Length: 415
Image (cartoon, rainbow, N blue to C red; front, side):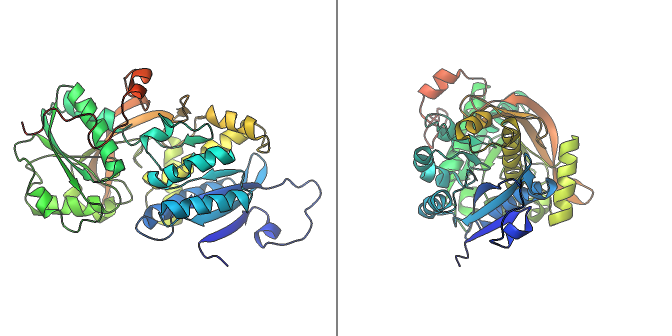
């Protein structure tokens, strides 16, 4: 048996056991859901949190959606693009899944984008944030449950310039597409607000020591913006403090730099960091309070980026299926419902999609504080109904190059 793939039939015990017994007369056919996640390798921690968010949703909904049981097929991509494509093909062609949730990483989603378009299988992304997936390379069979890389960074850049009144900022970020896009969105909005990005440093994903990069930081800046994924934020923030910069130069961060998934490992070094994101476990609404309490009860941890992304993807699936009365077999009608889905009960706040399948949602400016003995991201400001295009004209935005290491150009480096 392939240990990286497991088929779970949820809601019907006979199906869960793989039984060949005939169904009860009138019993609804299960909806076949594929789940592309990472259960091994460097990204496995995020994959685990994604699976927790999805399984919690299914448990809370008694393993049914729109009155039909759910048969869940889980595939481990190991965070490898070629394997992701093979697993997607297996889910579609062997397991006959009718919708896919996943994958985790942007480079995985890009690797299967053409196949999904060809196979015409609806896919809901719970975490992959690559800008062009819902911009210049729009796929009619793809929708996103989370924002683009830069979507929460535009408001943070605006906040840094207009509220914090920072004038000069240095950037340090992971040296891959996610880091580039995050930094580009922050840079654009910050400079549009009157600020200047005077330094950019790019550190490899697998860097063991940030000392040489911290030593290069311009100490005359008003703040440092740090954009990291996974455990890199833990290492950087600790070393930033060890080198004596905490308390001297304020730190700003991307959502993932101080995500709830890594905050418990940071300690007091993270206190005071201001970040931007479309979620924090501190959100004061009834849906989030119930969600946080449930995840804490079931998994003994607070939900973060990956947990709420997968939960939100399942909510989108639920509302779209209810709109077509559970008839996922009418693929075109279901995809239309998914493209126009409105989710009023997401823990992040109300969510709707734009014409390219990307959420329009609240973005929160957050500050790391300690409450009740644990680190949390407290809300400082809410930017409501933020789109992937921020305040820019959509047509003009799409005519420009995608955000990258060199775009928008850094006009103020070295000043």
